[in-house]
Length: 305
Ligand SMILES: Cc1cc2nc3c(=O)[nH]c(=O)nc-3n(C[C@H](O)[C@H](O)[C@H](O)COP(=O)(O)OP(=O)(O)OC[C@H]3O[C@@H](n4cnc5c(N)ncnc54)[C@H](O)[C@@H]3O)c2cc1C
Image (tube, rainbow, N blue to C red):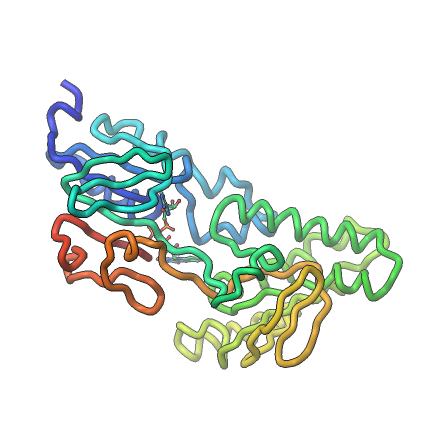
């Protein structure tokens, strides 16, 4: 008999990130069949896209096909699909292709997305770093910026190609700024003839009073010193007010740059809207201590959701 026929109780897990995959692993041996839905065909190790963006790791080192991760679990079905809503009364997950999947138990593990604080028009100029595609796009932009600088004769335009601005000094912004500085100062110098890549400016702009605002103050201070030691220019207490294709404005000043990276904010996925359930200011579903969604005892929300 197949796992499906043996186990009539159907658990649908939306999202095969950290939370969804761990739930699938922990349910091994339980009398259930599982459908694991993700809009990507791969699981991404979310803390490391910045290493791909800065050419330190290959994509295959931080992402794995979801199917192969559950290959030995016949009761698990993988569905490559994007969820657009939930019919809670009918206990059905609604997919973008207008089909649906019935569930007995629902686990929402859809994570977070970028938040541009009402300025979605900045996204093309200041892309974020959430997906594997984001990481390869950013890697191309960073490496091409050095190539363009190498061939640029005009000093001002060359300086703009050699200026890398990261908006937001949380973990992603700090790690990106540090790695781009190391790339410019340690990895690239012997490869270029016209430019000295040591002269690249890496500017990290943070609206709050310190880097790593969510961490203890002594760690923020240590991180600030470490960043400055490797040549990162850290700007604190200045909110960005404009992003364009060739500049950023903060604290009333315009800085010419061809590479802007957004690391300033994330917002939870739309799961709270799907269920019509209460969320906090970051859009995260509010859950009971057992992670069920109030009013929906058959639905759980986990991770960044
Ligand atoms: C630079 C960095 C460093 C970090 N370091 C740490 C650390 O050291 N320790 C730690 O605990 N955490 C760390 N984190 C945080 C951690 O990565 C996240 O908290 C974690 O990935 C959240 O897991 P999740 O399952 O909620 O979401 P995710 O892992 O983001 O997975 C969400 C999944 O849902 C899918 N999905 C989303 N919407 C839909 C939809 N509509 N339809 C279908 N599928 C959908 C996505 O494709 C994705 O696969 C770090 C994060 C970053 C960015």
